[in-house]
Image (cartoon, rainbow, N blue to C red; front, side, top):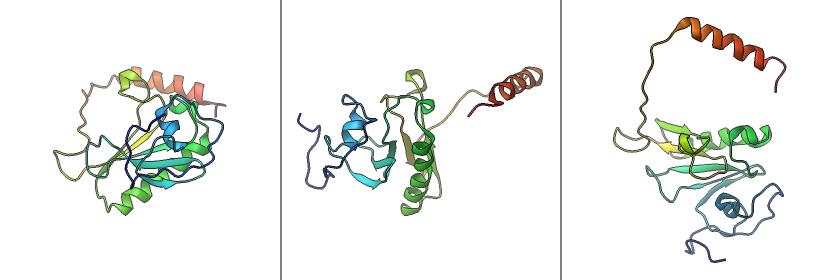
Length: 158
């Protein structure tokens, strides 16, 4: 299979990949070096690289080396590795303002069915992630009921 893009400055070093990858997944192919990337950091559990369709300069993706579409599909050891990488990248770019974004499902704007975290620099009002959502008035009775229901479900769960 031909890589989507090819350039000498892209990382293509072959490495042994965990057995928890999906042969058809573009991110799993990047992890396995079947598709080149602008790799920034690689650990036992994660792989970070520059986004090729950035919303701001330095927009990076951090992906677990475990294939799963949703956050709740990924083992904790892979998830706990991602945030220290985001922190290292933010420090390396000397970012004062940035977003860390993770979407689950198509209607939540997830485009690749492999959990990933975006580190998006926010250097000014016009670049980076533009966020807005309709705030709702709080019905404290309903909120209290939801709180109790969630606490009951969380009791004894991982």
